[in-house]
Image (tube, rainbow, N blue to C red; front, side):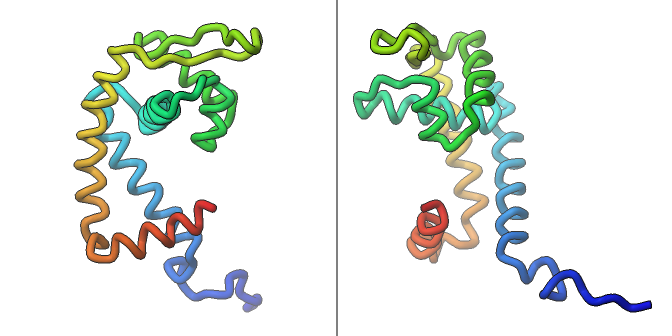
Length: 148
């Protein structure tokens, strides 16, 4: 008994969402493998980098602000930041404006590790995105459109 097909395409590779998922998973796997060398995950690196960028812009960075900036769940952000604090990479203190909020500060050890980890991230990105480098401007513009 033949039933109607579920999908409107004949192969998963014809679907944008599937392709994006495949590419994203492959990129994340490569990043996590490379960052393991310095004892970080991609999520840890991303939150450290977000803290760095927000701090450089002069913001008072709270856990909530960092979670919003990184588009990451608040509970996961809190757990990852606890791990990074235990590693001595950042500190979470009381916010003067809101006693319930945790204010974040990147410690010198965190900045040093972030600097080293970034060289690893650059290596992965250079290799991973190499095949589309000639179209990087178009690729980045399209990715930014999707991110919005």
